[in-house]
Length: 259
Image (cartoon, rainbow, N blue to C red):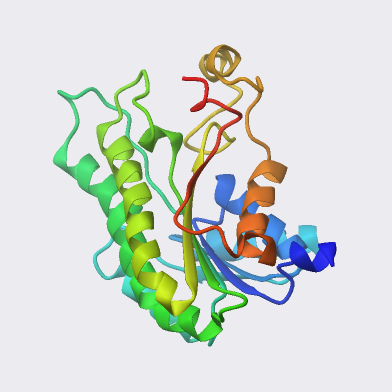
């Protein structure tokens, strides 16, 4: 019974931005646990290589689909490409994101639009485009799942200037609640995860600055691990998490709680 409670075996999942960072950690965890896992990324060759590596490392089924969520037509194109391969989608992990760190006087329109288009607009319209497949997989006993990857940067104001990033992630948390209210009637849960420091292209947890920040501010005194990311996503995607809905869950070792 316990194994089934936390099982994602047989489910179909799509993880955007799954070629690296926390997206890849999530994809590897789902694939290892028997989910039919798709990853998306901008570069088709890189995405295909990552999918093959994940499949080889986990012994599971991992597939690639290319898509650019920043472009105006990208979300619809990605949804259509996925729908050409699958008829149902049990779990959508909206992880693809862009960051920007720059002083207020140096923040450009181009940088603002790049972050907002990727982190917010792309997330919403990809979700919209995939709703028919999520609805097709959803049942009252086993809801469809949407997990949006936000950030602790959307829950507090960091010590560095990152205006579009923080604003976009706070908006993702709010959008999560709005989607929850509408999609619950379709037997779909929507939750957000707000990660703290995890190893990624945007966050070098081995840098001295990040190590100092972790030692100062995070009660557990360490960065996140692949198991941490996998564990929370598997919980939310399994029967164990079927009644969790509309939550933004910090995955940060206690950082937000200790502020």
